[in-house]
Length: 76
Image (cartoon, rainbow, N blue to C red):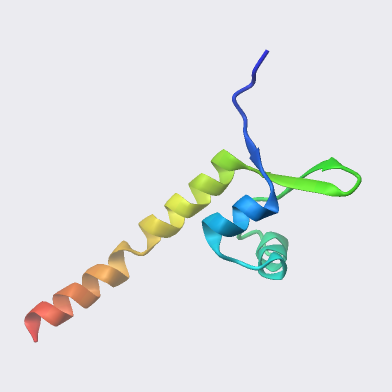
């Protein structure tokens, strides 16, 4: 039975978010990035949907600042 949950390894994660392994580690430890799951003794991955949700939240969070810049430019 297929669960529909897809996991991504670091190489794909780095392509998506552009962060180094160390920066992702720091964000995870501070609760600001989805936690990895252990696949084996020397293997980890991230749940794709959790990473996608994190990216979406980052995109939604930039709306206010971008709108302010646009308004300030239009008024000048």
